[in-house]
Length: 293
Image (cartoon, rainbow, N blue to C red; front, side):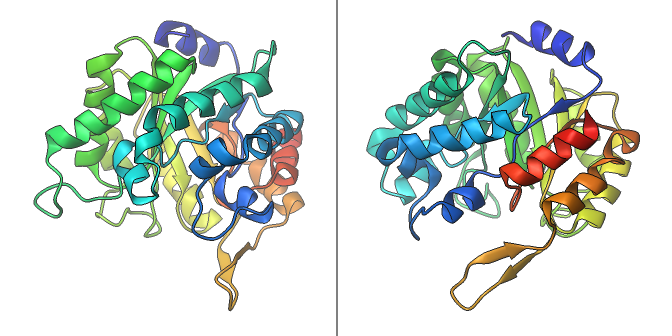
């Protein structure tokens, strides 16, 4: 699906439902400590397939591939760098199997590289562009409908990601989503309006918000972002704030019904594509979809 078709798809739907969390759900389903979703793409694809199917059955119009940490540089830290192509291609194949002949769209998830760019870190801008370009090329050729650059916090990295992607594919639908992990700013001090301003020069289908802090903080970011852009807004907040137990396990504060109630106001605040991030189970997603649709 090229960007023109994706824009048309967005234009012909008042709202779309994205999926929920990948990591927290896989952990709840037995993903061992020290393993990532990308490990299970190779080692336990049936569980990845089941999670996709559960989100589709809960009302998702869009599912994300399990490739958030699928850049070569991130895979190197998890011991999977020699399976870079296999991880990304197989993740798309699993999502395609889950979708089947349905009209559900697949977004290729692309998270941060895990290293800061110069002068704050070791990465050159060109290196960052090459990392995103290589992953984008694999995801696009494997059959995703769009690419999602998500959980960004640094404008330099986000712009490098977009430019790297566009260097290898100028047609695919592209979404960029920031995580305002300091409440209403990112750890780099970026506000929603600054993010929107920086994205104006790029050919994007949507910009948005995912992860972040509390639901109230995310909603404040949504209001600011919707007042700063004319693009459709992608919105995937966490299911509240986590409580960490003695074993390091996170429990998120919002029950599915509570998240469903909260979602009732999201379209009026400017959200067009809605789902959930950390802590958002298929049950949460079902309540969101029920409320929105």
